[in-house]
Image (cartoon, rainbow, N blue to C red):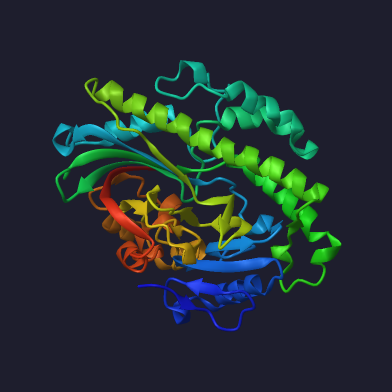
Length: 399
C-alpha cells in the first residue's frame, strides 16, 4: 500500500497504516520522536501502538545518537523458527503430551533453572563463542555484576507476557501441513536490568534537559555513556539470540524424542527490539527497531499473530523508505488491563479453539481479540515483505 507521511514533524515520519487510526498517545510519541534533532527519519509499521518510552512498531534512524528507550527494555527480543520434515499426519490427535514435554524441558514465566544449562550437551546447538560471550560479562555495567549467576540460569528459558513456544502447521501451497517449530523470547531479566540502568543515565545528561519527552533521552557518539551503552547493548542482543538458540535446540530435542525420524531445515532467527548500524543515501545511521524486524532484500523474517491466529514467514523486499523494515507481529489493539476487563476465559477458549494451550485467567490478556487482525497488518506491508509461508499453531506454550 505504500506509506503516508505523518504531518507536523521535522524529520520525515512515514506511516504504513492509516495515520488517523493511530491512537492519540502513539501519534504524540511519534511526533516527539520526529522532532529530535538527531533523527534522520522514522518508519512506522502497521502494527504500531503506544509503548512505554517509545512507540511499538517504530523504526528510528539517528545520526551519531541513539535513544535506549526507543529500543525497549527487552533488548534483543525476537523470533526463531525451523521447518521440520514432519506433516500434520504424523502428529497425534491429542497434543497435550507434547505440550507437557515442552513445558517440562523449557522453563516458562518467572522460572529459571536451578543450575546453568550445559550448552555443550545440547544436540544441534552452535558451540562457537560461548566462553568468549560469558567472559565479556565482567566488562558490563558494574551495577549488574551480581546478576551473572541469574543470567546463566535464565539462558534457555522463555519468560512470560507475549513470549511463546509453538508447534505450527503450514497453510496452503505445495507444503500444506508441514510442521514448523517457532518461539518468541528475548534477553530475559539481564536485558531489562541493563536497559533500565542506561535509560536512567540518559535522562540525567544535560543535552536531554529540554526534550519534548524525557523518555526519548539519547546518548551521543564519542561519549563514555554511548560507549558503555553500546557495549552492553551488543552483549544483551547476543544473549537474546543465544537464549532463543538454546530453546530451539531443546525444542527440537523434545520433538526428536517423539519422532526419531524427524529432520530439520536451517533455522530462521530475527530480533525485533534492537539497534543496527546501517547506511541510507550515503548517511551512516544507528537504526533502532522497537517492534519491527529487518526486511532487507532477501532477508528471511518471522511475523507472528496472536495465540490463536497464526504467523507468517516472510522475505524482505529491501524498501529503503522503511529503512528495510517490517512489522514484528499483529500489534496490540488494547492494553492488557483492558483485555482482562473485556474478555473472559470462555472467550479465550472460543478464540483458541483447536489449539492445545492454556485457557485460564492468567493468559486472558493474550487473547487474540486483544490484538490487531494479522491479515490486515500483512496487507498493509506488501511493499515491505513477501509471504514465504503462512502458519497456524496447534500447540502454544505460554508462561
